[in-house]
Length: 252
Ligand code: 9D3
Picture 1 (tube, rainbow, N blue to C red):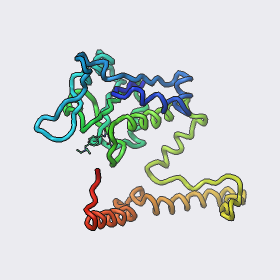
Picture 2: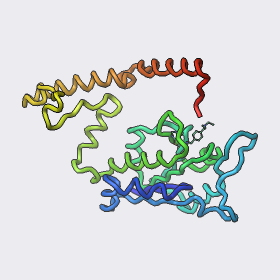
Picture 3: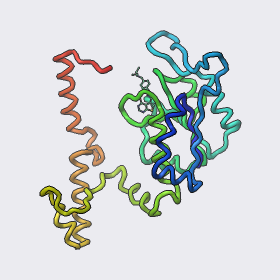
Picture 4: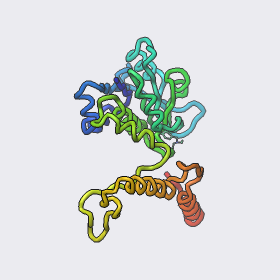
């Protein structure tokens, strides 16, 4: 599979893909990651990629022209197995199901947003979809692009050591969290590994793993079990609101 990443920070991607699963997949020829510097498609003295927003307001917006030229020169014509995504805070949230869909592609092109945003015509006319990695504010799309490459790369056939480890977890992902895991020593500073795991009774171990996975999911991610609200977060949000009221605290 080929990933194209269009960015104003090509150096950002020197590190993240040179380790672990993505490095192995690249070496094995299963994966090719091509980083494209957006400024290669600017032709003025200052290599301008951004401009002030129409209608006024803070910050700068990524311009259409370099982004359209970049994608149109990477793909002079579009083939069926190619898809382009814009990383943006306004996108649909990336999840394991989206990763599995991307894994079917021959090529995924990821445009990294920056500044206060990207000219909306990029989302409307240039890319196939707009993708966010979660409900928090980043300063650009580069970390999101790295997240997507890592997540999709490890699903590619032949990348993981055990052929069915990706299948097993894709079954549980989205339904519940993994069960707790332990390794030696069986007693660390008096904190003991649950007896069941040391018992050798595989039926008891299976039941223990299912029960603790469900307990942990109910405690940390009740939303996965059908509860739309995360009670702990609600409490944290209340506390935050109280701080705002008390001290006029503001984000950013
Ligand atoms: C604080 C600025 N926001 C309101 C005016 C809008 C905004 C603009 C640009 C918020 C974030 C960004 C930069 N973020 C991304 O490009 C981004 C992102 C993210 O912020 N969160 C989660 N996923 C992604 S993917 C790209």
